[in-house]
Structure formats: structure tokens, C-alpha cells
Amino acid sequence: MAKKEQVREMFDSIAPRYDLLNHILSMNVDKGWRRQVVAIVAGLKPERVLDLATGTGDLAIALAKAMPNAQIIGGDLSPEMLAVGRDKIARTGLSIEMVEADAENLPFADEKFDVVTVAFGVRNFENTVRGLSEINRVLRRGGTIVVLEFSVPPKSPFATLYKFYSKHILPRVGRMVSRDAAAYTYLPESIKNFACGKEFLALLDKASFTDCRHKLLTGGIATIYTAQK
Image 1 (tube, helix red, strand yellow):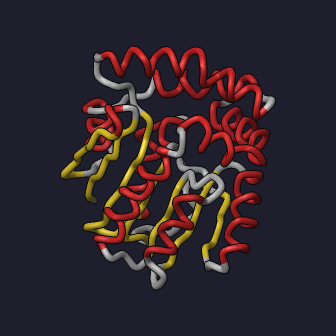
Image 2: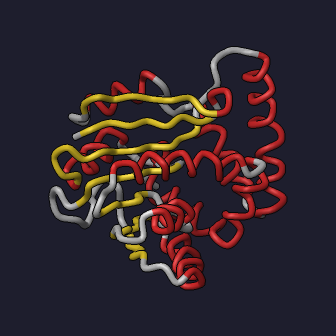
Image 3: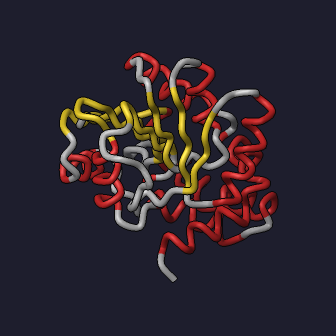
């Protein structure tokens, strides 16, 4: 089975409990990370934003609240995650379109968006450069990609603690709450195997982005990447 099919099935299976697990496992730190992404995007004053790998729409909702005049579209591979997201959006009264979308074959016209955001989804792309190249295609010239992704902290006592947490605590709690052992064994493995830091900047460059930058968050357990088309 192709990676994208495995990812779709995995996220479909955990969709009803995904938000609860995210906040438990990150101890709500993920909310602060998203706020930093929203601040970056809002400062660009975009008219159209695509939140790719939107999941249940947390970042899309935060973007829509911060920029009520902007058009926000959420795209994701998992129909079940999108269904949960649509229910959340309906309760907020916000206008956000949620679209089933494969990152490597986006259903959008060239140069449609001013900004594309991806939070915790790039490491799930089957072909990272192809997905980034598709994002480049749908961005207008001068547009910005903003990626928030987990990363492996630099060597330190904190890194040792993080390694223990991701190997022993995260899969156990994830399994108990989600009842899907594979999903929360996959998570730390996908982080460990992801090309983070300068390696990811090189992939952005390969996908024809310029001015590629990154900023470590919370000791390096997450990173924000920005780049321009």
C-alpha cells in the first residue's frame, strides 16, 4: 500500500479523538506554536490562504478568526478528518471551505493563493519535493509558504528527555486514548525520519523556493519554516 493510502486510513481511524490526543500529548504547547504561525501569516495581509494538511481545521479556524476578510481554504487527504473539521467550523459560524486534497496533485489553479500553510503534515507527504513543488505552483509570485513541523531537538539534556518521551510515553498514551497502536507508533518514527532543519531548507530550495528560513520552537521539538516563491 502506498504511503499516502496508509496515512489516509490512519488519520481516518483516529479522526474522532485526534484533537484530544494532540492537546494531551503536546500539553497544549501546540496552541502556542499555531499562534506564532497565525501572527506570521496575518502580518503578510493575504487575501487567499490555503491551509494544507488542515486535519480537523485548528489552524484554518485560527487564521479565519485573525483575518476575517481573507478567504481561507483547508485541504486534507483524510475525509474523516475533514468531516470533524466541518462540524467544528459550523459551530464557530466562520466561513472556511474544506476540500479533500492530495498535496502532490492539488485541485487548485496556478498562482491562486497568497500564502500556503502546512502544520504537522509535510512529513506525511509521500514525495516531499513533489508536494512542495505543487505548493509552489498554487502560490502567486511573491507568495509565502509557512510550515510548522515537529523536529528532533539538538543534542542536550532536553533532547534526551524528548527522546524518552517520544519512544515510551507518546505511543502508550496515544494507544490508550485512540485505540490505534499503529498511529502513535508511526508518529515518533515519522518525526525521527523527517528531514528537519537545514535538510528541509534544502528541499524547499529544490522545490524552487527562495529566502528559506527556519526558527526552532520549545527547545527544537518543533520548527517554523518560511520561504518565498
